[in-house]
Image (cartoon, rainbow, N blue to C red; front, side, top):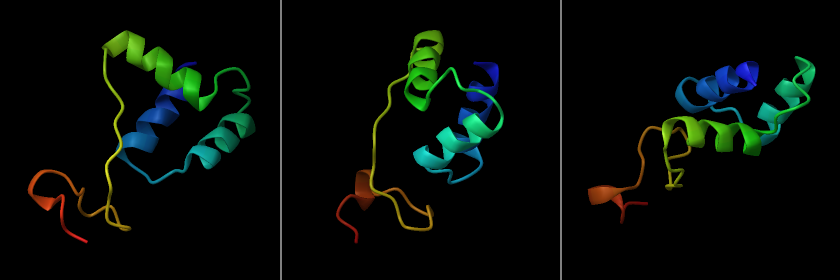
Length: 72
């Protein structure tokens, strides 16, 4: 679980790893137990956060929220 949480940190803060690639990386490193879903659920219980999705620029340079909601 610790490896999965560390990889989830990288996914969220440092890279643009897809959910599919996340799962493949876990398998490569022998973390066959936790899935991305169970890792997120465990983390949510530990730190009480909510997951929400927003539209993003293809380069992740802007999130279309707030005053940017109507941009294209």
